[in-house]
Image (tube, rainbow, N blue to C red; front, side):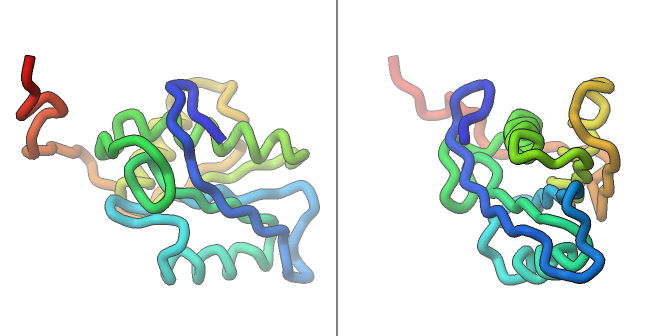
Length: 144
């Protein structure tokens, strides 16, 4: 799938597997900085949530098999919005976002964008209260 700003996002869809899984509920799992959809701990989280509903995991921009460059939580809200929209297109009436660390910040920021996010529940685990990045700016080393 592609974000509103054109970044390709890698995702993994898993239908619910447990007796308690509901056909209308999907969990969208948002990993932390330097993570991706294929990390063993994300796969374990996905298996645990699959007992209760379908699960979509994905890699934020600049992580895993997704395109683009990380903005350390800034434009990643667009990544989550694209994944949530895709989950809704799959027919899920109820969407819950679950984020860890940077992903926790992203799910909160996404929910704060307004009532039309398509999300009914948000879980944020160990999200930073503020994020200050001291690395190089996107144009460091640019010529021209």
